[in-house]
Length: 133
Image (spheres, helix red, strand yellow):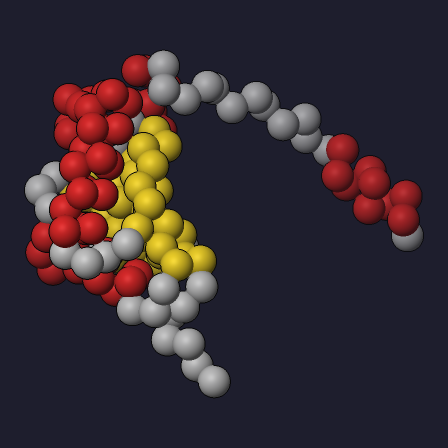
């Protein structure tokens, strides 16, 4: 009994860093609203949330909707990638992102969108493993 993609599905639309910086969080919220209306006009019931500047979470609950959302997202301007189930799809036949994860991380730190990661203390895990032996 295959539901063909029924049930709650979560996807992300990730914009290029250039566009994310241009829109900021407020502009990303506005874009999510506009896309929501466009999708609904096309008969696709989805909920869109701007989770970060340039990153939109899309939630669907119905068969065939994730595929329709993916098609829609990849047709929009300034898309770096569409992501579902940790799988990225790039528009226009690209095979990799315009902005790599590392480049994004550095830029997001510079912009104050991301907090520096705390250094993980090294060696603690090994001690625990030894204690278990």
